[in-house]
Length: 340
Length: 267
Image (cartoon, chains in turn yellow, blue):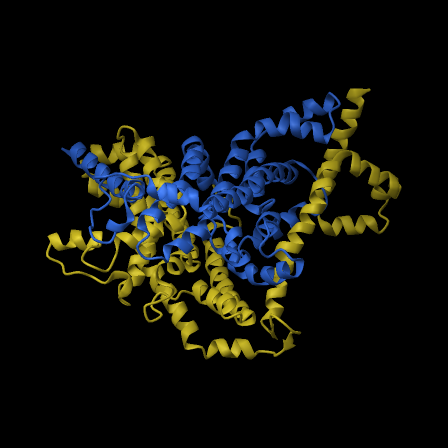
């Protein structure tokens, strides 16, 4: 009896599998009364529901609430935010339809464009050093040093530490007076006291430095995985040919890591466009708006200025930028994120 | 020779990565009034517990830690359970619309959180969720990334065990808890650690949903201390205390972090 049940199940599985394989055109044809299909009597609706339930109860018990939750907290806000860009949303009182007013305001908002430019500038300061440092860390860890697990842990520690903690220490390290620790160290090599966070040319770089410190550990993990998948025989062959370690690196290791370079570049770029915490904590967007990033400006407009509709426009601008970056990723790395 | 260079570089880098944490820990034992005068002030001369005592007596700091625990622990366990179940559903179950739903999930993951926060703020104000834990717990009960990780993991596991359990007459729920969940422990641990870190460290969302000081999680609370000039010792003591849970989780689950990062491309 039990085996029979199972055989029935397997048959059913096979059937549904095969059904999926039949081209849509053929299936349509069959539905229209093709004899080979209509021979099998269709189960009554009630019976089919019961079967589905017996086999897939867990699906319906958990998937329905999940989809509801997904709709309320992801899909609806996403759509609502778009509608919001065409309204004047007031904290008190009814919203008013204003058409493209906020989009036009954005086009003419010098500060918004400066925020975008600042964010691009931040990316420039941040992406390549993060990748380079991550690669260097991975190369050292992978070179067969002792206690590599411990060192991996040390380099990864900032990744799991909150921005608030690191920003507190970073702000102290980069104090713009002669008693600041970095200034103190610089004085030994004859460099004058720098203003750092109070200097509009340096502040963004100091913030980029913080992010490099915080994120290099995760770049290291990607590169480490990449390095481990490089065929060891290639190194052997190159060594026998008498290639120097530096030459081996530039002609073998570096080009073979190309997919990792690309992947890491994309995710650090996406991350850099969302930078908010460090500028909020350390500079408040200043001095002279030099560290006002897109998300910080969005926060200021939306939650300090209570101009929620305009903030929604800015958030859509951010979304479009990230969308373009993600599409580039998909184009070059296949249709899905699951390339690992 | 080459070895010496490698090790020198390794130790230098490790020291610079640890230095901020050393400064934090040592600074927390120093009297704050020296903080501004001496760049090397964190090197201990007369360690004191006064910063810690101040935070404990202040009361509000312990409340912040408590708030952080509430908005972290509940989502961590809920994410582990629901992501495991949903990951299983999407990996092994056949039902109409499976691929479409999953595809929509993966598309939505590209939407930056900063976009959703504005409409969510309006919604939560309407629900009466501002300055309540609900605003930070309910939306975090499950996560697309967690479902994705579990799905990836279970797709590589053969169906034999599951089929065997079914032949023995186990129903869906039983199969999940007796067979699938024990198998998925590594990936569920990854989901839990990710969830812990992202909730414990989150600044942006609580900054917006929590406006009353007594509802701040520790991140927002520390940020409010940051502004006060001259409280470096207290700030470092607070940072150290808020770092302890992260550090403990990290010590025990480091492997799951790194594996999860490789699997997902998160951060």
